[in-house]
Image (cartoon, rainbow, N blue to C red; front, side, top):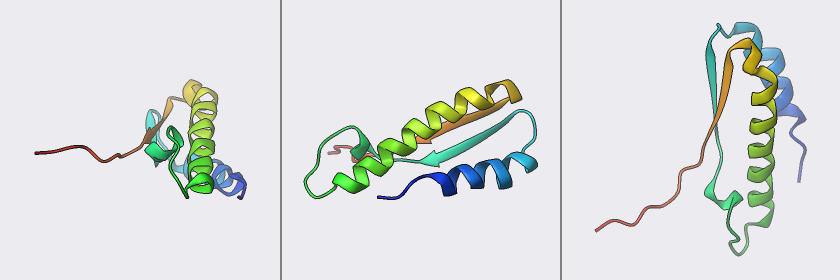
Length: 79
């Protein structure tokens, strides 16, 4: 699977120059990063990499007043 260089470039070259202080960046991830599901190894690995990217970059940007969050929707049981 691919690297996340494109995402790092997009955040640093496109988003950061136009963000105010404070700001928030929200990226979509997946519950699959935390559980093992058949036939989803590459997808799950890419989402886990995205979550690591978000945790790491958030530490780098907190001093600039920019917060990063990950939203990982999952199915919920209902009646």
